Length: 399
Image (cartoon, rainbow, N blue to C red; front, side, top):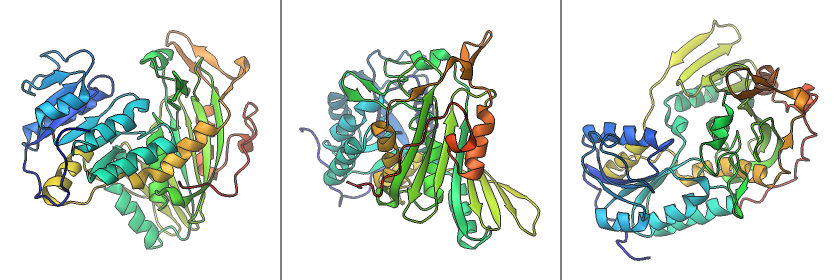
């Protein structure tokens, strides 16, 4: 590749750091707002926007006049960007990240980082070889609750760690699965997409549960059981659960649905021999329940991941979510990718909500909570529509 090359031994960058954003609509609007916030603080400067249709003056209000182009590599070259924020369709993540890395541009890459473990390795190895910093956009892993919960576990506040559960009961209408050509797809034009409930919208539940249990790296995953289902007319799963066998010896079970009766806050449940910790990761809220004590609730702050990447480049602060810290999550993505296609739920298992254009699976809210509470799969909880779990492999390659 042509363009600037990065010298990892060079002096720290000065602020404001020039940033190019690839993908500024849909979820990308959140990044626009975040860049606007950090630009007002003098930490970054939006130097360029890569979109098929340029942003309007209204969309760029308060962000100056950044260069706009549909050619990502050319935009990086012409703007002198030092950071690229990549919020594009999942199958494009690896190639765009490597395009940035080849030009010495540091990266904030939206989750999921790739649609397969092979693509993840290609991205992570390429970024490492280029010597650039890469942050994966699991915002929940920037929560100050994580070190607080880990400290509680380490000091034995809930006894011996027995396992972790994750629960996500969300409501999404049928238009959600038509928000983009790749939405609700497992594959598109021969390429993996894997836009399932646990691998994209509720991916934070999986990544956060693994991280709290100290099982964030690929080699921490020994096996993954999957149950993938769909009520909607899509390829991917909208109601699913996984159970991860970890090298640390405690299971991690996460259940999710986009067909809930009522939307609820997703959470991770840490099970101990003498107590439990509930972490509502979107709210940075923690509840400690243990023998001999009343319930203790605490709120925590959060470090923004782009801000942390800037601090890493300017002051040497530790990077919160480097690629290797998401290797275990990517082993779960790989298990979902290689599992049989999600089973269509029978018509008797779901119904439409009048006037809301969405499909609901009656009883799924309770099943999601029960899976996190008991570390069980849907089939083990007696869900009549759940298929038998995939047999657990004896080992899973980490390469």
